[in-house]
Image (cartoon, rainbow, N blue to C red; front, side, top):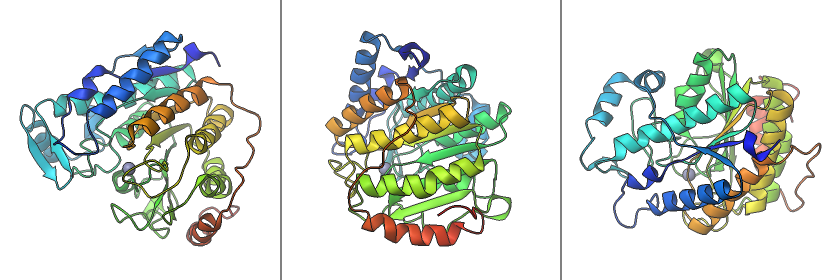
Length: 345
Ligand SMILES: [Zn+2]
């Protein structure tokens, strides 16, 4: 894999979604993304500017009346939920964030190589008809639905943000064409993501929640990836993988209570990268979610690019360390998922 096969989509425009002073999802996050993007370009990496997402793509996962309500906030400040705000440019910027994620999927599908979207606002809390948790449009869900519309049969969305991605879960809760796998701190915001939430109807078994107690670290996350996340991905056999890359499970994060290191995150990303290379013709799209310590965010973005640009390793050693938190979670996850994934665990 040459560096030039990987595409990074980002935009200086992401600074123009303004949140009130003291809000963790702040414009400085976009400045970090811009710095990483500039370094990537300077080092010979490929970048592209995002196209705004088209209405048709948004309408696959959001209600028409919700989309009208969001569009109506253009040009003004609005508070959409206790944590979610718009500024005059937010609708335009959120359209670029969703469009960048769609672009990352298009790159992955067209070239069999990773596409990355460094974006804000994030998306995974946005539901079909509700803005929530700093999110307006559900970027990963829009991109997954776009991949299906392009003819893929099955898409996996893996979400290692410290928060559960309620929006992605509910949007595809009864849809077996999208596997949603989330590792997250639990109990924690937004309150959803119990191991027993496994999907419904035809989608039973295609929602996989791995709720972890506060304090989970690199070895815990790597163990649940090795024992549950990767085996279920293998059994599901997706045509593409979308990574909802939230970096707020980092030990330095001011919101999350997990203890991941930058290298711990890199190991998880590497597992997904290797899986996509071996099993999905290289189709991996990455879109950012949370991550509120600016230095940790910068380090993790840099590292995600490095992992995507490197040749996938033939084997990835397990992370050593205590895994009591993983062990406690695995028991409930395996009990809930074993009817659907009999060989797993
Ligand atoms: Zn988060």
